[in-house]
Length: 212
Image 1 (cartoon, rainbow, N blue to C red):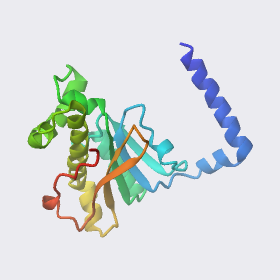
Image 2 (cartoon, one colour):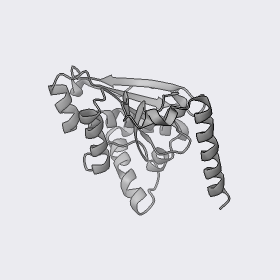
Image 3 (cartoon, rainbow, N blue to C red):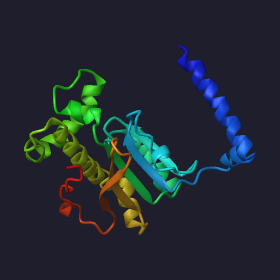
């Protein structure tokens, strides 16, 4: 339980540091948020988008779930998406997976029981649609990382087909969807593909392998 007091202590130290550097730091936070990006990423605790992008406070509107899935029946994500695009006016949406993803790895084996297994069954659907492109690789880590890339592609297509994104496209909004993968080994983002209103979704193939 020592971790809880430590978190609170670090919070007070951080707040004092911000005020010492900029007395108006928190006051400006009260003016509302104007993020440039909606970030849809994995819940993995090692992946902290505000840190490795050095985004300013308020720059990222963030939604995270295991394996960065986009499901039309996920009311939480659909609400986040609609609020970001239609209320906040965000015109850049990122889906960012990461190599070595535990959820993706679990989907290549026997799924756990309960809510986690049910959630990851959606990754198994992705695997089933692209099984030959994944199982042709002999190394387990390579299969995991290739499925990470393909999963980002499929989730980006799911995102492009949502009513919110389709409505923004129909309105002529300059909305762009970006599919990225974060590499835990070197801290770098690897872009995979982009989708905008002019993209023919039927022509979007599997991304080229980035991690080889």
